[in-house]
Image 1 (tube, rainbow, N blue to C red):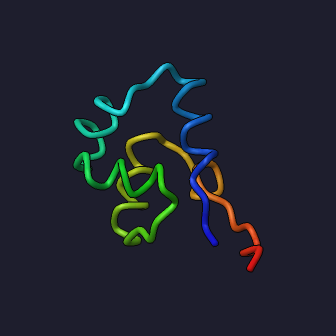
Image 2: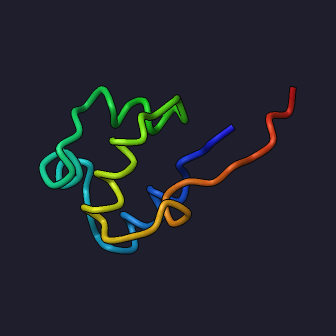
Length: 68
């Protein structure tokens, strides 16, 4: 499964809020909720996040083997 814990760590390091993310990356509050729940994301959303945060995909997401 893909988890987005690194996204929240990166945002905290940069002093950014979810409001900033919504405004700068153009994602809505539903997408923020889905990111927090580690739900599926479209690649265009991941692209927007990386562009807004000036980072690589591996800076905001990682693969963890599903325990089930």
